[in-house]
Image (cartoon, rainbow, N blue to C red; front, side):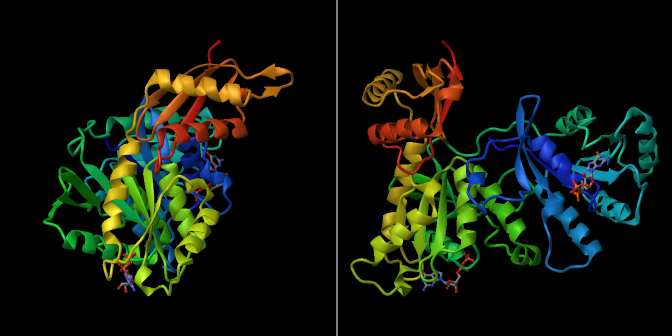
Length: 436
Ligand code: GDP
Ligand code: GDP
């Protein structure tokens, strides 16, 4: 099921990123501990009334060295393209500025629902500041305070009202949906074209949405696949080409609809920092991951080249240690046949459900082999384990005190679970919950 998307627009300094961070909250991010990865984020997940949604801070999207007004116009256009609901944010202390009116003009031209948020209304006396903003023509202005966290509930209630109905799965359960991500020029579109070139393909604009995502469906050896055109690979525009943040955003939107993400690397050029960042998004989204080293035709090789490259990948992508690596060439089709079988395997593992009794036996065995840690004389006690979800597989350990499950012991258990059940290509989520 796809989550609704909310975008925040408004001129600089009205408090967009402050509100974004409030809405996203302190989400635990594994990748964030990796230097240089997912810093200054503009895209994340929030939750309101038990419904998850994605949220974009368009203020973080900088378009080359365009002048100020075109920047905010572009940002408003991106919001219209990407979002189901737009939060238009202004600064209550400044009154309506020219830049606010520019944003408003663009938003008038779309038919997306807009909720007007008047920020920096830090106390009830300042509530009168909001009335001026009725004249912008977006209905009731909601007074909020990002720094004090006031008024957010009412704002989100209003946003929630405009969410689309929860929709059904778009494809049959057994269909494997995958997308390709990677920095520009690694060969994503070439690879898509090569894969599709061999198949009878049905290309569709996804039903019922106005977003320009293009899905390509094909069947190979009885298995149905959909390639989700992530970064608008076949629809390149000026904004996409020049804006890293926007292309990342598009990639993340595609990741979300996928079961499997192919992280494409340029074998000829090698790994650079940007690859790591892109891979971090795939990991964090909890999708199955395959690392694809493309342009293998252009690499001078001897019998050690592949192993050396593989080691480099392992050193650079520590957090993707579960992801298998495929070497191929989109151009010459060298080793292309190795790709889909790996996609099948990781998709299967991503949806794998293990039996509770076998899982518990494994946990007991593991504890016998390597006793649980103690902290201040208190020992971790694991009473029971169960897999509560798939995609990705998620395991809950019922324990006497969740604080006692330290990183190293969690990793020990994860390794044991992986040794026993496979789970190649999929992240595993392991949580501890208190129950004595
Ligand atoms: P953005 O450029 O729209 O993302 O704005 P920021 O979130 O970076 O905020 C700009 C400035 O306004 C920062 O100095 C914030 O601390 C401040 N700010 C944000 N929200 C509030 C608020 O509700 N009240 C007040 N007084 N200041 C705020
Ligand atoms: P994208 O930006 O990731 O979609 O990359 P493209 O598919 O546009 O490819 C970028 C460039 O790399 C183009 O000039 C392609 O011809 C070239 N390219 C793509 N795949 C291969 C490959 O397997 N081998 C070689 N030698 N070049 C490739």
